[in-house]
Image (tube, rainbow, N blue to C red):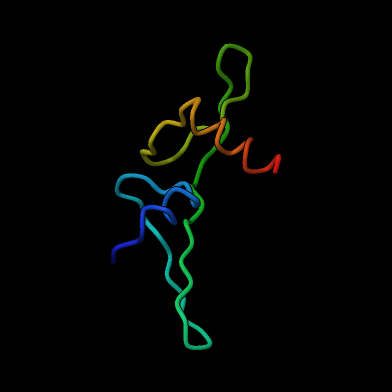
Length: 71
């Protein structure tokens, strides 16, 4: 399935990403599933560790999210 670039950017989808597809009322709904994770203590700090490989979050990603929520 091809998802337009503008929608991928809006949803934060990049690279190969798993999506959940649900049908209802004659349409498809796509969502990015939660990533299973656990908390570990590292150097006295609690760190969330994903249980599968995920792409790292960049400073640009963080800025984009902050800009979106501040609008």
